[in-house]
Length: 215
Image (cartoon, rainbow, N blue to C red; front, side, top):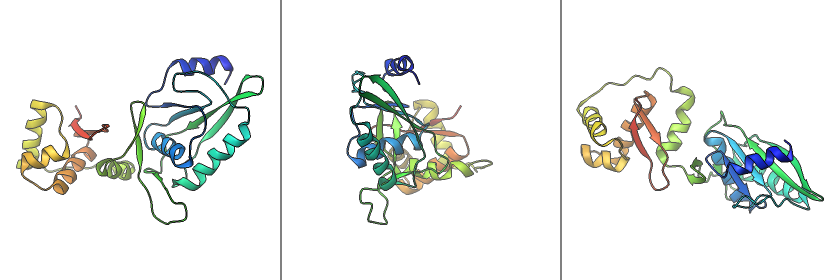
């Protein structure tokens, strides 16, 4: 990537597939951004660029590369594949472009304590932010590779749901549970099965996930 191409990329501004960082933040935070991109559609993190799009670069790029590698090796589970590219922006000033492809090993989690065997939260991108994935989103990520050919038998509860969506356009798990007078667990399972059958679409929201008709 040339300096001009970098400038054009930065002009796009932060979005669902583009994040700016003035420097590598603490390990858990950069791991969160990398995991979110891998769990969504992939994208780039530009290190050495401030939130307002000012290209600053680093003097000590080796230190930033070490911090990035340390974060991904110890705080991403399973590990996330990525590529880095170094762009010279001024004398003794460099920017690192981290390219994270969409993963085929979703979901990835951020591990707060590398010494433990547990997993922390998963993250996804919502517009220009990385947000913690809901239980429904995590389940959806688990099932993406096996969703083909899913069929679903409609009953009274499912018909009620479809009529509601025809009228109002969107519904959350909590709203569906209340509408159908069923438990949140059953509501979640029903919505996810319909999503796997390509009848519904799951949207990640900053406050709450919601479902819409997929046609």
